[in-house]
Length: 509
Image: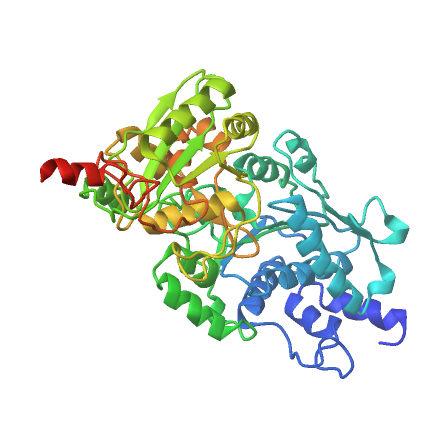
């Protein structure tokens, strides 16, 4: 294909044949290229491309548009080549039908720019017809028909859903792609659905993602879902893809268990079993609330202080000595200022002779930290959004990764819960079972925000945050450890000389 006429002729021939396009558009197996060790798409990628081919062939001649939209949903494990397939579909769509229009979005703007669009840039650089199109930071288009022949990158916004309205291209081709679709809000889906309505038009809507949520429009595309009849679906197991790290996958399956939500989502491409990906297991919470409280007398006493940020929230001081977080009653205060709360923390320290005080130092919590230090208390200022320590011992699951300090503390608390004792408190139980989580693109656990929990009608998890703060850093056991059950502890100062001992002996004689 040395002449443009040959290129145009070939692009016309593969207008209805995406698999043939992919095999001919890139230098598969050619020495000196990025693809010299690659022979072509994976089996699952070819299956998706063939779905598009079958849809187009059902419409007859390429110039005759198909009457119904093709909607494809793919749920997959991690690292199976979703972004590559998205790139091939976009390049095929725009180069094999004049005046194609389309758009692409993802769960976050960062994902869209650094992953989806970056991968498109890679394949655009290898594309045999790249000189006929221009790729910028936000669009792919034909330079001579910039307004009518283009695909745009559009970050979504719940406050600006109109960005996905008005996609019309009657008599030609429309392509729309959602990447990491599980986390795209339902209202974006609904607006998109209402705009892809042109008759006599090739309309292809593809959505891809890890199945991180057990509810929402992405989940409803699959078997048993409300919209399942409208979608062609596929679920991709990472183990069946040639280039995935099989040894790493095996380690993760061994660590988490094959039927765990982590493995189901990140490896098997299946939706989680636990509703909305609940972080705590109900049976483990109930067992910890019923378990007899016991611990080593030498275990350190940790104090967690969650500082209220809103008028309706409570400031909570929680106590934990080793595996016992129940014996010492937790203290709750409403409307208390930072100075007065610091005094309460000081009194708690005097009562239990705590070994470590961990305070949520974000926002107004910083004032409590400062006032405690003014009282000559040694306290830790814990920032929930800071980086995790990276060392999960002595609590946590080996190889479990966390997106921030908050997730790490919660992970440690969850591991401790299997043998720990907590108050039998219905409100605490509700807070624990309401918390949801997902994974970011680094396979790190990221928790639902407290603000989002409250929007769902769940009470602010003040008690729970106070408990997990006691896991901010490990505290070593020692003979002078504090006590929470009234038992006498070893005195802080001991001496061997008794000045009255001689006199006592003399009087006794």
